[in-house]
Image 1 (tube, rainbow, N blue to C red):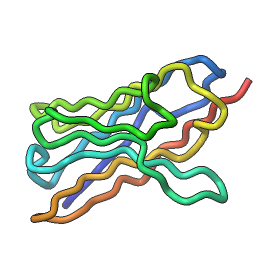
Image 2: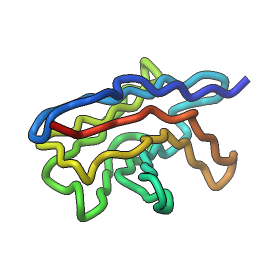
Image 3: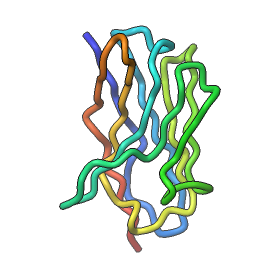
Image 4: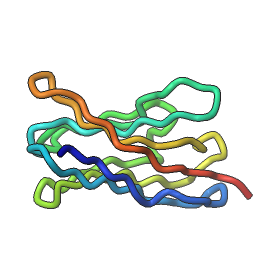
Length: 117
């Protein structure tokens, strides 16, 4: 069955870094665009970063541009989110998403990121 398993979340001080990973299985990973979303308490889920199926194009929310980097390894069926210069407002549950107009849309279970001193 389809699985997206996020890892790498945790507690970090402001200014610190974390690297999230999302391991995919059960579908043809290389056919899907991959995205990272986040949802903070009391707020709607928002798109943080996306990357096309080949990795040729990336996009970012304005709030994370210059601090976060999305990448993927199609040989390992894994997408990453490198997060640097973290701020308290980055605190949220981060979700991995696989998206294809032709084949559907899948979500991971989420990983908590907390930025606090």
